[in-house]
Image (cartoon, rainbow, N blue to C red; front, side):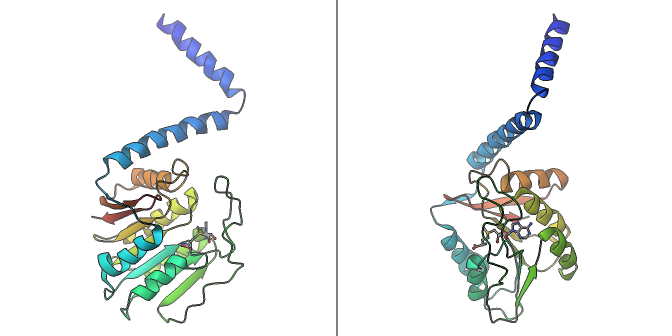
Length: 231
Ligand SMILES: C[S@@+](CC[C@H](N)C(=O)[O-])C[C@H]1O[C@@H](n2cnc3c(N)ncnc32)[C@H](O)[C@@H]1O
């Protein structure tokens, strides 16, 4: 009986594997992340905020972090600089640094139904007259490994991940990992949005499998942003 059911299951998988194997398996993988993310959302002790992303960033820079604190703000996915400007304008410490990573020509690949090339700033970096600011132009896969040697573990880091895509999110987390320190904040822009089973949430979950980083969830917003603090 056991052998019969085993061979039935085996035959069923053989049939499925003859057509659209990748789509078939990626459906179940996504389903797994969906169930996991629902559990994370419901069990997370993060404070639920009924704010939009702009209010969240304004609150973080002025209240949670404080305008006079020396920080290194690292933004992955800058586009026209909407959130970047909030941090540069809101933090007054002359020793703070603000580094933005982007191709500035848009997404390097499709993000669900959002097409490759979306969010293009047509190659222009934001116009900010502030010596504390630095932009690293290009694919994060190339620019971040070259940059990380400038970081020091003890610096208070605020990391904003808004690249949308799985691969760029995971690569960002892996390269920053050696420099993460107690109190650092990571802000995810699309953690709980519809793309969670394939992108930011999934990348963070996979990163935690590689590096068991202690953290606590701080805030979640109705639009899908999520803020964690490294412990
Ligand atoms: C949603 S936009 C960022 C929005 C911005 N934070 C804001 O608040 O206006 C996403 C950005 O990620 C960038 N991006 C995505 N994948 C990237 C990668 N692998 N390397 C560099 N930039 C990337 C795109 O060029 C795009 O500008």
